[in-house]
Structure formats: structure tokens, C-alpha cells
Image 1 (tube, one colour):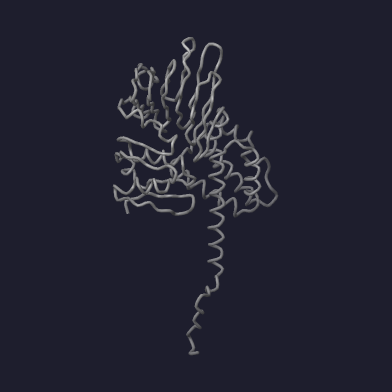
Image 2: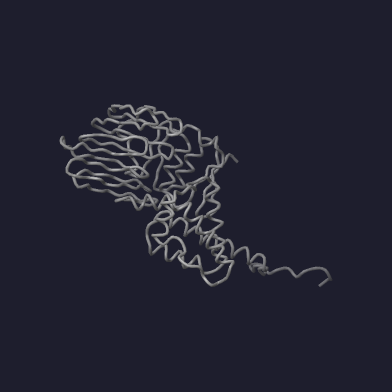
Length: 345
């Protein structure tokens, strides 16, 4: 063979893997493992056994800690739930989320563990605090039907947390996160109250939905009648709703808007469908997000403000995303099993 030329590789055989390529493959594999732990902890932030398993994985090596830190920083860069009150951090300690002792593997691992602890508390603290307060909760892609003590029926959407506060004089539940559809047993002596962050709903017996949108609260009435009391930030007034009425409270703008939908289309997520009328693209993405075990990122803020009307199949979140993006000529990219990015090109 002439000097300076290399023997060609045989058909069907891979070239030998170089050390840099092998190291990169190992890093990618560890990032996948870290993202898998991240999603599992996000869906179940109050399960001690899961946290013990995660801690064991984290403390195995510096590389594990570095992969976890990178995932946490990426999440924080997306602007998602990065603030954590001190009480949440203490709750994280109580649940075993933070390392209880420094390993003897060396200063590098100890430093990484402390950094991981801070990032983990900041990101998962709010999830954990909500879960600890909840009597009922669901994870990504899960729904649950709950029968309350008075016979009322509540259907929880995915990633929802609900607390029940009943006594002999009152019936109150608190929507801590997510969305729920309520079918309330009539009791003239004890009104049924749903307390959300921005408003409360008072009824005797009816069917309605309440959702925490992240930016506010949305209330939809299927049948019957309800009285909605707004929080002080939006004026504190009372609004009477008729079937098909929707009131959306925007916490940032300090206002509430009324609209109408077909009562038959309220809470179709119970049947695996999503019906939206003139909602923002970002809001619809957040509804599909509840069904997906991957994180969905909208790359451009102008996309999030687009208005959307449509019907989507929630049984396949990826197909729902494609159907949502198609009318706007947007691209949905799968960057990993745990990440989808929506962009203009």
C-alpha cells in the first residue's frame, strides 16, 4: 500500500472508537441517566425511597454529580420554578432529598454534592412543598378520580395536587397545582368551596373545572351555577357564571376576562382529548406538557403568544405537538427522549 494512505475499513464494520469519542458517548449516556432521574423526581417529589436511590446514584462518582448539575442548570436556564422559599428547603431535607453527609471520595465530590444540593432544593422544593400539602396528586400522563367524603366526585388532570379541608360546617378543597373537574353533591347547609391561588369558587351542587395556569386561574362551568370570588389582586369582586362561561384570571396583569365555550367541550381531557378556543400557544403547550414525560421548550417568546383554536389527541403528546405546530409552519425537534423544542426553523 502506498505510503501516506490508510487501509479502507471493511463494509459493515465500524471504525475503531477513539478515546475522545468514547468519553463523549459516556457523557451523553450519563446525561440521559440524569435526565431520567430528573423526570422521575419531578413526578414523585415526596417519595423517600426514590430519593434514596437517587442519592446513591448521585454519590457514585464526580461524573454523576456533574451530569446532574448540568441538567439542573439547563432546567433553571429555561426559567422554570427556580425560586424556593426557605421552608421548602427544610422540607427537602426532611424528605431526604439533600445529601445528609459528605462522602469521603474527596473534595471534588463533596463540592459537587453541595452544589447539587442547592440546585436540587431550588428546583424541586416547590414541587415537594406542594406534594406534602396535597391529599391527592397525579404525575405526568396520569388522571385520577377521587370520591370525597360528601359524595362529590373530583377528576384530577395530570400533574395536579389537591388538598381536602372538610368539617361539619364547611366543604373546602384547595387546588394546589394543575387542573380538576368537580361534580358536586348538593348540600344546602354546607356550600362547596374550591380555593385556588387567584380566586375561589362557591357552589351548592354543580359541575365545573378549575385550572392553575401558572400565570393565573381558569374556571369553566359545565352545568348549574357558581359564584366566583376574585382575589384582592384582581379587585375582589364576585362574578356569577352560567353554563359555558369561562373566567380567566391573569395574575400578572391583575385582571379577569370572561369568555364562552361549548359546555360539552369542558374537561375533555378526561376522555383523552384537548379542546381549546382562542387560547395562547404557550397555554396549549402547558396542557400537552402534562401528558408528556419529556420537557417541552418553546424557543421564541413570540410563538407563545400565538392564538390557537383546535382539538388535539392527548393519547400521543408528540402527535399533538406536531398538530399544534403545523398550522404555523413551526418545527418540533426531538433533541433527546426527554426534550422537545418548538422553533420557527
